[in-house]
Structures are given as C-alpha cells and as structure tokens.
Image (cartoon, rainbow, N blue to C red; front, top):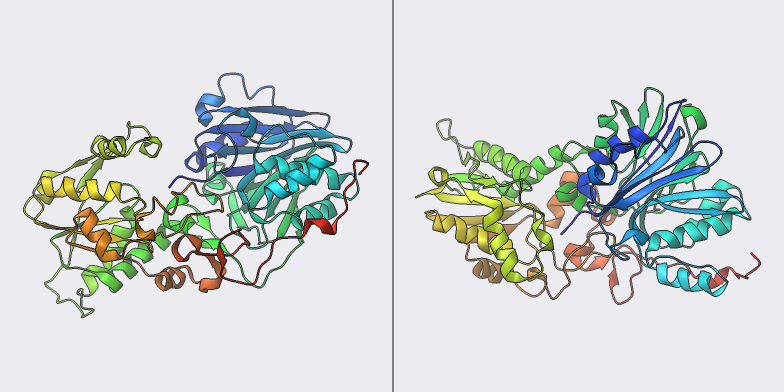
Amino acid sequence: MTEKCGVVGVSLDGRDAARPLYYALYALQHRGQESAGIVTHDGFQQHSHVDMGLVGDVFGEGDLDPLAGSAGIGHVRYPTAGSVDTSCAQPFSVSFKSGSLGLSHNGNLVNADEIRDELAAVGHAFTSDGDTEVIAHDLARNLLEEDLVRAVKRTMGRIHGSYALTISHDDTVLGVRDPQGNRPLCIGELEDGYILASESAAIDTLDGELVRDVRPGELVVLQEDGDGFDSYQLVEEDNTAHCFFEHVYFARPDSVIDETLVYEARRNLGRKLWEESGVETDVVMPVPDSGRAFASGYADAATETTADGEARAEDDDGVEFAEGLMKNRYVGRTFIMPTQDERERAVRLKLNPIKSTIEGKTVTVIDDSIVRGTTSTQLVQLLKDCGAAEVHVRIGAPEIVAPCYMGIDMATREELIASDKSTEEIRDAISADSLAYLSTDAVADVLGKERLDLCLGCVTGEYPYDIEGEETDRDVQRPQLASRQLSADD
C-alpha cells in the first residue's frame, strides 16, 4: 500500500505564504512523492508552481520568490486516480468569470466520471483524467450563480466519495471535509494567521498550535490577513467513516488525527494485539518502521500479563523488545518494483538482520499489515536463515480482504493474499510458526469509535459509499445528478 495525498492552506497577516506552505509540504511528504505544488494569490492575481517530484526537487533556489501573496494552498500527491504526469499534479488551477480557483484534494470520488460526462456535454473542456479537476469545474460553475458558501454546498451535494480539500478562491482560503470525514483535515493557529492541513505535524513544523479537526461536512473559511476563521456546517450525517488505516499506517506517528495521537493509538493497538494473540517468545521485534509502535505496546503489555492473560510474576520480565532488523534508508521505495522477483529481492536490500538478537531464539515479528504476502514471506525466511528457532508473525490490523476506493493505492482482490485464504493458509504460505491479526472490534475500541463510524471497507468488503459492484455497510446512495438541469448557458 502507498500513501494518499497531503493538502495544506494558509492565510497570513502581511507575510508571504509560499515559504510556510513549502515547509508544511515537507512535513506532509510521506503522504505523496509523485508531485508537489503551491498556488498563492496576492490580491490581484494567482501564482502557481507545480511539478513532478519530491518537494525538495520541485522547489529549487528562487522558485518561491515569484509566489507572492499572503494566502495560498499546497499539495503533495500520490496518484490513486488519474494519470502520473503534470496534468494531474496539484494544486489544480482555473480562471473563470468569477475569479480564480486553486484546489488541492486528498481522497477519491466514486462518481467523478458521471459529473465529468455531464459537464463535458455542456461545453466544459477537461485537461486531465483526475477527479480533482471535476470538483474544480463543478465549483467554478456554481460560483457563477451562488456566493462562496452556497456554491461549495451545491458541489458537496453532487460529488460522492472521500475528500479533504484546501481551496483558494482569489485570496480567500477555505477547507472542506467530506460529510463522513473519511480523509483527515485539521485547523491550526500560527503567530500571524491560520493553517489548514492534512495532519497536525505540518502545524507543528510552523510552530503553530492545533485548534481542532475540521468536522465532517464542514466548510472552514480562513479570514483575510489571518484574523481567524469562519465555520459552516453544510452537511451532517448520522455516522462518520474515518479511515482507520490513517492510525494504522499512513499518518505520521506525531500527528493528532480526530483527537487521537497516532503514536499512542499504535501502541494501544499493539497492547490489544498481545491481549488477543500474544505468544511467549524470547524476543519481539518490529518491522521497521511500520511495526515499531505496535511492537512497543505489545512488549509493554507482555510485561504485565502472560499470553494466557494471567498477572506476570515479579521476576518475570516478559518478552524482550529488541531491534532485530535494520533498515537501509537509502534504498528507493520498493512498492514500485514491477515484478514479483524484484519485490522479493528488494526486501533483502532494504532490511538486514542483527544476528545476535535472532540466532537460536524464538522470535515474534510485528508489522502493520500483510498485503500480497511477499514481504512477510521474505522476512520469515530472512529470520530463519539468520538462525531463529521459531518465527511468529503478529499484525496490528485486521486482514486486508478488499481494495480501497477512497484514495489508498492498494492491490486488487486477486493480489490480496487474505481475499481468498484463511489465516492458517496464509501462515503456511509465509512459512511462519504462527500468525495472528488484530480484530476489527479491537481497532474500534482503541480508536474509541463505533464500527459504523469507521471506514472498514478494505477489511470487511463493505463500504461507506455507494460503489458500483460493492456492498455497503450503511444506507447510502450516490447523488442523482439529473436533479439539476445543466445547459451550456449556465
């Protein structure tokens, strides 16, 4: 699996927004590595710099100087819909009769094609195949007829899927979160203004203070000159659909998402993992870096109780936590390896075992997920080749049995090892001595949510949105676009 996208927007008092946006994008780089961009507005005109690559590659010496203005938005992208080229790089910019728009999007619409076809039929010309441009065109059309708040509400009533948006309308910056809050978005206060960002880590980078999360279905409009922000609750649903995988994998551990510190959530998931399926071994070790917080919580819980749930004796320290695998941080992102053989070789390039921690010992290795099973197979073999007497695998999330349509670049059902195999069959496939996953109920318990307030589609096969050919976990239907008659004169 790969990250989604990161969005940010700022409105400041007299200070150019470009450099704070640049630093914020660095803090969100983990959410997307394919492209980066910034759009600003100086009160008279819009300025844009968007290109393919990492933040540090896209913005070189002098690239920030032309981005004048104290208001702007930024984006880092990992493509889950649309092409991998500059046509889909963001922020997406458009000029029209009512001014200029810039739009950054994290998420994925499931009815983008329907809206694109409808708008194209009345003369809209699209330059990309991404869903972000669809939102921009629809909002621009609505702004010809309505004020800003009503135009956003009308667009929200037409698009269906997951989205966290930062938008610039001339020199006004706003943030929108979809009615079920699938993608994260938060508000921060800076010394001279306000910021909207996918994660609070971006606020911390600018020495700001987290104010709160943008509520599902809420529009937040940052006031000019950084004086504050206005809130409009445009849509309310009975249940949310927060992506649980933000806490399991995607978000930075130091971010607070939906009032929960990600690092503590992962540690508590690890504690639950011990309660549900702990196994007494000589050592527990994380798969770096994804399993570290889980393994820490797992080991802590193991000092308190035995695997049977009994209080541990005072002279029994439980399972030792140790770093048994060292990561080579100069190896490229191995998820782009196109063939199975290359993916298998990439594991040995990326991870090197510490023999003294492993040789002759029973080992529990902890990770956040098993997708295809390739990495897990190689890890188990790596540890056994290093002399491990037993290798037990524990996963800090439920089995991934279905794809994600909400903005995570995930394998197809045919590629997901858990889609057609039992836990025991997967254990046999990866050659582990035992294998266990965390239960879905445990995830909901740790996050303090009802199951129906989480998006669990990838682990249940039932989704919180109306997706063609898929089951839903609630009463939901996509908007009927025919309810609004469009004409070329709109």
